[in-house]
Length: 248
Ligand SMILES: NC(=O)c1ccc[n+]([C@@H]2O[C@H](COP(=O)([O-])OP(=O)(O)OC[C@H]3O[C@@H](n4cnc5c(N)ncnc54)[C@H](OP(=O)(O)O)[C@@H]3O)[C@@H](O)[C@H]2O)c1
Image 1 (cartoon, rainbow, N blue to C red):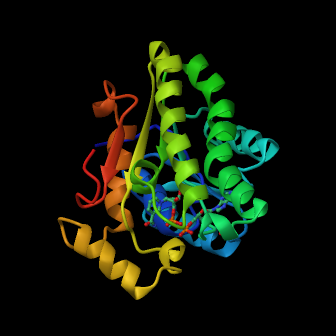
Image 2 (cartoon, rainbow, N blue to C red):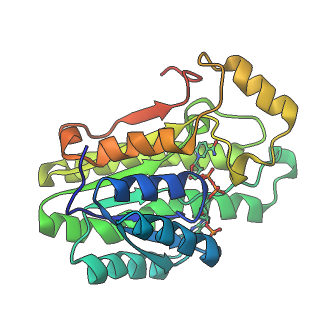
């Protein structure tokens, strides 16, 4: 899958899955915007990794939970590369706890970071993509959005919301040759999953037919496929990358 000549934004690309997606898109020829909110040094390291391998990347700071920052991010990509072909809505966070202990702020932070960010960035990206008569929007959901998870009602609601959003937007913009798809990873060891106990991790492996955790790169390959010309007739799908944990 080649992405030569394409321009891409990956939100939350300073580490973890977003970092792997940015590096994989760039390795296939895409010019990439590495978005981050607070981890500037890490984002610059991702840019250096891409450019030292001969790729093209810039880092752009912005809290995608805020509409102004999302608008500025899309504008930065178009200013830098002249167009926007691929938007990967990857930025996310968790505030895990049982609902009885969940404060309003824990709910709002996760909904804003994981769901409102997808609205903010997609809304800003759709207009230039319509003008270009094509584009790819790929939203990183989670198997938790499909199956639910005790202690993650805020995160599950956001990630299920991402799936409903993906299918609805896919119906709105399909006639403009813009595809909108979701990728739902299973357990991928990153900073986000560090908070889980050893017992929770063991239990997940036991329930996973492939009997291991996934790698950030394995999520990235699925994203690059959905971003490619080869995936032009695929829209509104939820592609699970979870070792068979949740079979839809
Ligand atoms: N790891 C898993 O097992 C797993 C499973 C299913 C789904 N996912 C999803 O995959 C995505 C990436 O997760 P990850 O595991 O790679 O997490 P991670 O290692 O914690 O990375 C999260 C990234 O999001 C950025 N970010 C957070 N809030 C942001 C904001 N408001 N604006 C812009 N960037 C923001 C962070 O950058 P800063 O530090 O600069 O803020 C960081 O680059 C998330 O959507 C997550 O829900 C992960």
